[in-house]
Length: 524
Image 1 (cartoon, rainbow, N blue to C red):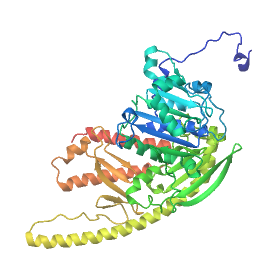
Image 2: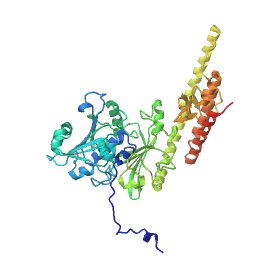
Image 3: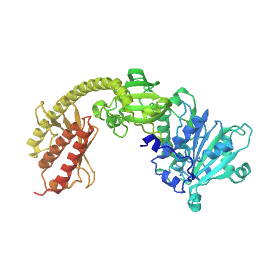
Image 4: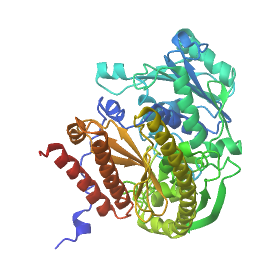
């Protein structure tokens, strides 16, 4: 009986056939999920791997103008003063999955997909101009998705130097002004920009500056490369707020896994400018978690427990952990353990690596949460004292005016329950431990849930059929009682959702959906 190995042996006598990708491949890849800032970052990654000292992103209006701040975007230009590309490498750079250079452990590239995939996620036309030798000739190549659709075959067009000088002189002029006449480097021009979500130059530039400042923070701060957007030098933005002097480093450690090392930095951001701003609580809640940096480039942000990212046993996102962030820096030797995605914006941790990280990080997360839970309770107690005093004064004023005008003046709603349970104060629900949830009304649509929670905000859906039916004709007292009841139930669900077990979270979500559905159809 043949063994599995024998049965699977490859027959070298079989006739082979070359598979040529169809013309729809590039159109399909445009749906990969890149935003314009992520697609642009793929092009900058290639510039870094080309050993550039300077990179530029220029935003052009009509006829390559750059004068008006709010100009309508017609073209984008990406420039670097790196090694440039030979004719063979230039051709390969338009293919997908074809290595144009040897990647090492410090390279930002990995799959040889980003350059073309990033470009076509933004535009339908890509023109590359490059010089690989000082004083050498310029060479170019063009990719046009409309032409591919017309010809129904994947193809690119060579642009010799004489054609570049004749028909693309404005692009050659931009190349020389940035990189220098006769110097090595590469320029990529994107036109037919049909995938931008904004065509105002100032909005585009602001988003790029924020994204690039964060994902290239390490490169910018170490001054290994200078990056410019709209001729302005990029400012670094630390993803864990290390650029704020008041960011507290709780722990640093090297972790060895499968013979490779990664650096772990655990921080508390509560005293930073952002951390101390109470108007940024939702932002802080959404920004807590782990940040993965591969070869100096941020690839995944603010990750807590997540089945998609294979992260288990840590913690679910919760306001109590909003000040807690972890930076995990590694090189490509750990790519398999981290599970780096081809778009370089996700991870999927192998179990053994996940467990090692979990053992290191969890004690500090628990310490951080306990510390800030106590501080929160103290703050709430002080605030409640002030609310009590305000309520007393309002009641006194109300009584005085009532005697004069014989009209009752509504006062701010005082706390209605004992301190040993939930307290409803104004537009807040306060737990016995002092932690507060804010109640607000929101339009979540007729088909949306009756309520949901986002960070510390409980949102009651005013468009839900139950609310619409029972608020019509109700007295203010009845309406308030209904709102309070729903808010208390929502808080209970929010607390149930803190459980770290995925099956519990799924059950909570299912129960919330069922309640919303039943109340939408119930008749009295």
